[in-house]
Image (cartoon, rainbow, N blue to C red; front, side):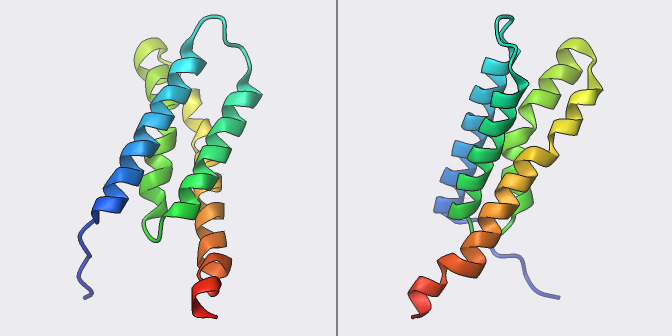
Length: 111
């Protein structure tokens, strides 16, 4: 069985940034005057895509770090478990960015 590699300092920084960006998006989304789900969804998708471009492995971890805050807030503050349906949006962004990096980004170095 292959050994799991330890997480690097760069990965920790990217993970911390994803956590903070996700928390900031959730904070804005939780404000009473904010009523634009489309902008929130696009922010999660774009942040996920940028995060995916920076990482090399474990995209699920970064997607979860980015997108868990809105559903968590909805479940804990108001009992709205339907907000967990938003999780595919940051997952799509992170996996798309990760796929682009794996298939096109590393070719620059190989040439």
